[in-house]
Length: 254
Image (cartoon, rainbow, N blue to C red; front, side, top):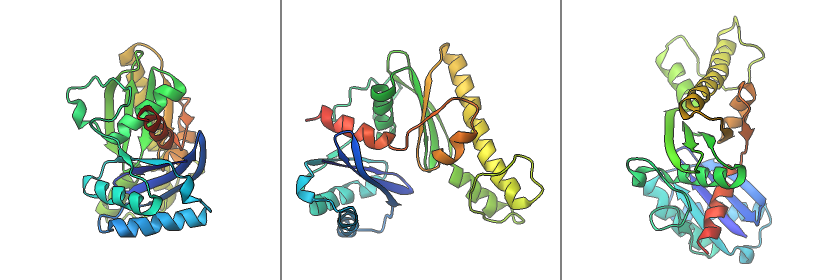
């Protein structure tokens, strides 16, 4: 079994993979104040909850966009799982050709998403990852990563609205029953969900026009399951895309 960890700015996804099967996947808050020991305790608790025999964990791999915590989480894996993890970054084999001005500046999460999309769904493709930021990235008809767009994430946008508009409340985001609403909370929910869905539809349409050929579209990330059903574009929802990509990269480095 392989322990796969994706450390994002807001949440960290911890998954255990047995071949192509996901044994478990849990999202926890990314906390800059946690030590490696505290992360190790949390991992150990997850193993106990899911009745995991840690002696069956053969290896681990980490994708991180939080440099101050990368080595804390590495040490936590050593403590909790008794294996030394690979870290997605320079020197790791991915098989991905990156055609942007500064390939070293590309986030590990985007590399993993692109590798998974190419391997599992073919190319050309457009990959949407809805986390702290929403990224919409393209692998062209040669399977090359050529870039994309980054926009404020759903949570950031909604929090900014509640914080900076004094008469608007902070709300929990749920799917609206309709687009046009007379109540403030429902109007904010509608604007957020349908606004984000329209944003995705519009950018995908413009990307496809710019490329000159259609692409498969794959979405992942914590809020994708809320927004994607309201898009007009056919989009494949794969909540485990990142974990699958980490498994693929791990296997390329055996």
